[in-house]
Length: 214
Image (tube, rainbow, N blue to C red):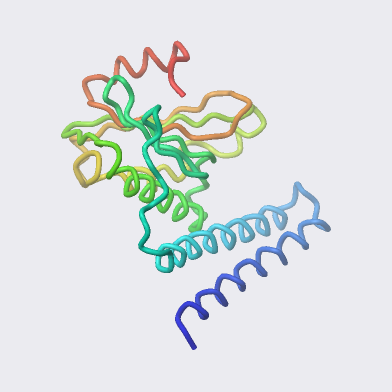
């Protein structure tokens, strides 16, 4: 049995498991603990299947020139997000989803996978800076009824930090990286990630408060 066939079988199992959870959700009270547990399992299975499918696609795609090219606006875009270097020289990454709860393993792995793919695919088209002393600013945007689901310390922000360290700033050096977590009330649900020189944190703060970011 080929490795690819086995991978496809595993992906199918994950999708079927997710579908079974969704079917059960239809008959469970939305405010119950069981509803949340089923939803978490369904989400984890879907996200893990997505990661596995991406990997299989990368293995099987032809050696033809990648169709992704740098667009005129300097942004490298994928369905799950985009990456660019701002006019200030900062790295800006937008994820088209909110950060998952840190307990959801599949969710944090999904975020890491998205970020690493954006970095890897953009590196040939965009000159990404490296900051010896950096500030990492994460701004989540979502409606009011979503923003209070869980606190900042429960969000999977470490997946962002771990994916970017060694690529945009030094690896495992708390003295060389500062972190800021913010939430803004907007109609859209997305996550804006900024990496910039630590001594420009004040500029970032002023721009965020004046609504110039995102």
